[in-house]
Amino acid sequence: MLYLAHLSLLHFKNYDHLQINLHSGVNVFTGPNGLGKTNLMDAIHYLCMCKSFLSTDSANIKRGAPAAMIQGNFLQDETAFEVLCTLRKDQKKVVKLNSEEYTKLADHVGRFPIVIIAPQDQMLIYEGSDVRRRFIDSLLSQTDRVYLEKLMLYNRILQQRNALLKTGQTAYELYEFYDKQLVDAGQHIYDKRKSFFLMFKPLFLQHFLSITQTVESADIQYQTQLDSNDMKTLLAQNFERDLRSAFTNAGIHKDDILFTINEFPVKRFASQGQQKSITIALKLAQFTYISSHNKPLLILDDIYDKLDEHRLTHLMQLMQNNSFGQVFITDTHPNRVANIFNKYNTPIQSFAIDKLKS
Amino acid sequence: MITYPSKIFEDAVNEFARLPGIGRKSALRMVLFMLKQDVSTVQHFSETIQRLRAEIKYCNHCHNISETEICSICADNKRDKNLLCIVENVRDVIAIENTQQYRGLYHVLGGIISPLDGIGPAQLNIQSLIDKATSGQIKEVVMALATTMEGDTTVFYLYKKLHPLGVSITTIARGVSVGGEIEYADEITLGRSILNRVAYENSITK
Ligand SMILES: [Zn+2]
Image 1: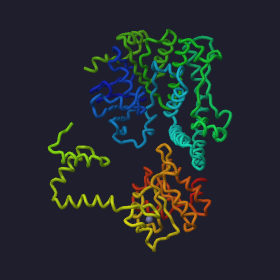
Image 2 (image 1 turned 180 degrees about the vertical axis):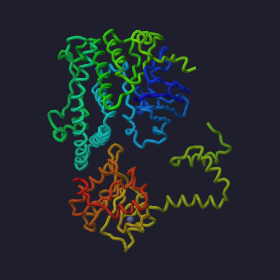
Image 3 (image 1 turned 60 degrees about the vertical axis):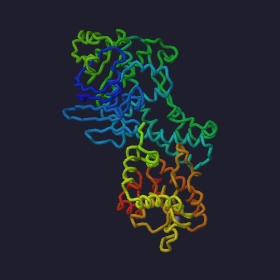
Image 4 (image 1 turned 90 degrees about the vertical axis):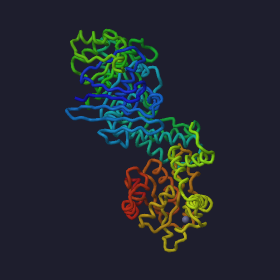
């Protein structure tokens, strides 16, 4: 099993310096808002994904300090790994595994997988399609190295193509080259997303059913222009339009996910409670999906006061069945989480955030 | 704000600090070093820099740096005028010349195609290349550009422009260097990759 045994921070966000030993099971961090519980979770996210789940790199260096450092010691089946992430003002961030620097950060992503459940998951329902694509991408990037490489290439070429469209130049040779690359990468990403949804949908439905315990039938659909035409045809069909709008109109960068309950779109017709059930089911399905490759760390950031009876029961049953590996929980209430875990006879390691910092 | 003992001194620090990769601390160190040198040494130093800017121009044929209208490589009668090596910049010419394996001429593009950075074909020395190919004096063009997406874009674009003119297109063996920047490849590897160049058609249809 994979877990983070030790974390140390230097000039990261509101932390000057912090050293902390972590439990391989459930770690609970309590304290009022604004003291840095979520920042601590973000540091763990950095160690796994090389980036924040909240903000840009430069915003994470403590004010006045030239650099921030996040260091973590992972253990997996008795083997130790040290991850070091250094953020410097106006410089490339550096990530090292066992003192060896990565030339491509993408090589690190997925090595130590992570899933985070947080209040901002609601954005998956309210916000634009880019948030939902990012959900798929961050998930697949952790399990499929080639996917991440193709995705980065696709995005880079898309930017070049859009920049070329803006210049209004009719350099057809360049479009020919960019389109050839977009077709290759785009078609690959489409195939991967398509087969991902086949596996993911039953996992999602299973968690949704366990959470809601109702007869409501939820559904999740992968929506993409590539279902009706292949990438090559789409680019050809839209070329005149692309030139006029100075933007690439069709491709996998337009993909979306549609959530429905009883065949009505969740975005407009579902209650707050139903929406919460959808997002938690999504994240738990993400956990189950990645677990089949390598069991991820799980962060439950500030969600315990928002769980109703059903959702709480489902989550605690998963805890009891050892479905999870190492878990990090934050909560404002000093005893709420501890009391729940006591009731389920599940041991935890508690940290009061104000004591950590002093 | 740091205060300096003299205005002249401060001006000198400011000038050194303009150099790429040089911060104010390093600039200060350089100025102090200069102050310790003989007047004649520093005079020679500044004259060399002045002459560099005033007298170096770009070769009319290949856009390499040169002291004359035509650079020493283009003017060399022993070099193969039917063979042209396409590079991004002058640093690449220096790297390839150091291998002593290449006996053709060069064409310096002055960059690679990247619309995101505002560089399209019109911003590069491409028309003069097409003119050369049209005049029929070139038989083979070797592409020695970085193995990045932008490098590949440029090679493809040039292939499309030059191939119809009856020029055969080759590329230096790929995977020359890890970073894709040919100036960092070691001389032996780079030299070998120029000798073992491959037809471009083969590399796009693979
Ligand atoms: Zn020349």
